[in-house]
Image (cartoon, rainbow, N blue to C red; front, side, top):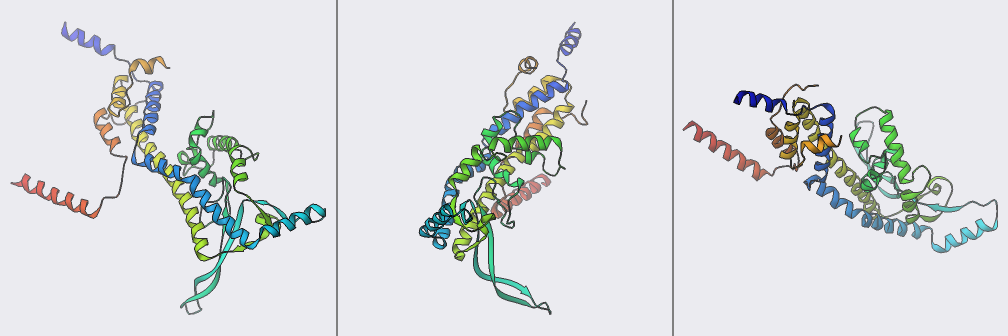
Length: 337
């Protein structure tokens, strides 16, 4: 009788199909994104610094520009442009070329090192999609990564938008899935129509500049210290984008292991157990109500422990490594004795 009851109990277990596995995976992913991990803390902290960071850099840029193109110069230029139809010499701009006289290393014909005077110049773009690459003088679509990181919550609240799409698709060729979400993201930010956040950003960071065409066709002199201050601004923006990438990659790496485990589970209760072990408390009723086999069946608790070990990573100090080595050698000696 007991064997029959056991058999009946086994028959009542809900089999895990792909729909159920996907639902459990999605619930776990949302839980992982909400966890207060080192990666998320770094992202949140740097995000809180961005407005002040950009304001400080803008104040520096404005100081440099107005030293060359004074308020009086700007007033005269507007007067002439408004008076004569054939004069186009001033407009509002948000990007600049700054330079200073520095040194650069070169080689002579005998490959001997030479230090020569040189003009060191870079492009600094204060638009929302302004270049964050210190080695690149021009902006591009990839630089929307900064806007994605800064307005991640706002973007992800929109239908068919995904602020993490560039990270999820890293290393992949251009494809309709990537194009769909990048186009929708940029459209929401106002990049296609100069509206929304993109317009707000541009209007906040713009100056009347004298010159012609792109960046008003001029490079403005500054000091080396001023130049390095602005280079650090670009670097800090890059670190923020990197923090966004590191956080999302941490979650994606965990999800790879989780999906392998879920694929191997035969019953829904095994999937639920994994979720609960990871701190995501759900029931089979929730999964069923909300409406393939794997290579290896992972024990849910062991897999959960492995996933937990994939976050909050940091480089161990030399002292910690030495302490671990001493402990290991002590344990080895004790096992021999």
